[in-house]
Length: 224
Image (cartoon, rainbow, N blue to C red):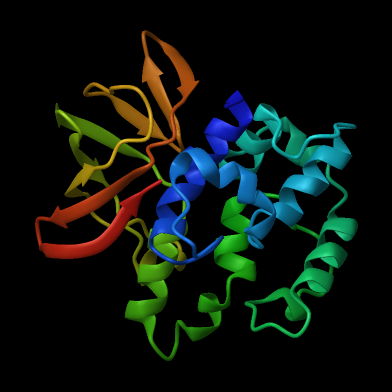
């Protein structure tokens, strides 16, 4: 499996396993990249990123990394073309704020843009904030601190998404337990937006693990 395919699987597996996006046939991590076109919330962005940088492979490692955690390639994407592509792809589907954007200013080929702008749950915040924030929490990329590691189980401290967070206030930290690792072993350190600080250098580090519980009780959550 190429680095790009591996990186895509590490990020895409958790939300797919929870049933939020991608194929529903139970494809394992090693098979997910072959179904990348079935991820409506990722494929349009990946193809626009690849086109913008003159690449032919939407699953190129740098293209995949740019979509999930960002990078300079985002600045190369034509925002007007990206918005037009998204409106065409999601035409007739329930979406978030796509139809309400007056211009393409701020449109990014980035996962967070999809979660907080395109994904329909942003429109339900006033009706059912608990469910809406919970789904966006499950899908977004976030950072945390690995407190301890025991086999395939990791204890992480991370700031959860709250309704107030969406309004500009960061929630208080909590501890979450995780398992089902999708990469090599980790050690206590800091994860920031999918990267790990190790020996003074930042390296790509998608978590790809499921959360089991928090201090406040069982949760349906994940670390991405």
